[in-house]
Length: 216
Image (cartoon, rainbow, N blue to C red):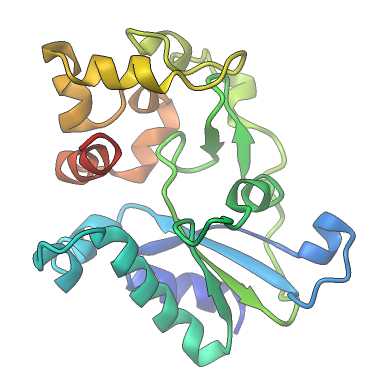
C-alpha cells in the first residue's frame, strides 16, 4: 500500500497521517521495520469519533479504545503491526519517531509542534510496515522560525517552557480555578494560541473531552 492509500484509509476513519519515517535511515539501525507511519487526529476526527460506540458506551478510555480498533482496521489488510502511545510501560518512542519525520519540531514552549495542526498534537497510533514505501519530502523547517510565538506568553501560570520541565502542578492548580474553566472547556490556552492549531479544527466538545482525560 502506498503512502497516499494509507492517508486515504486514515481519512475515511477520521485520522490523518501526521508523518512517516524509514527507521533504518533515521536510526542507522538494522531494523526489520521498513516504514513507520504516524496517525493522529485532524479535522475529520470528531465527527467520526462522536458517533463511535467507544464514545457512546460511557466505558473508560474511549479514545484509546477507538484508536486501537480503527488503527487495527487500517493495519490488517496491509499486514502492518501497530503500536499506540498508551502501550506500556515501557512506552513506544513516539516523540522520537515524530521528530524524525521532519514534520514535528520542538516549540518555544517545549512541547512538539506539527506543521499543519500546530500545538494540537494528538498521536493515536503507528503503523509498522515491513517494506520501505515512498514518502513525501519532509517539511524540514520549523514553522516556529517565522512565528511571533504567542504560545510563550499565553499561559497565565507559565506552566509551559522550553527552558524548564512542564510545571504540571501549576497547570492543574490553575485548572481548578474559575479562570481555568476556559481551558477545561476549550483546550489549553497556550496550545490554542499557536496560529497553526486552527488546522486541527478542534471543536469545544473534543477539547473538553481531552482536558477531562488530562485533568479529571
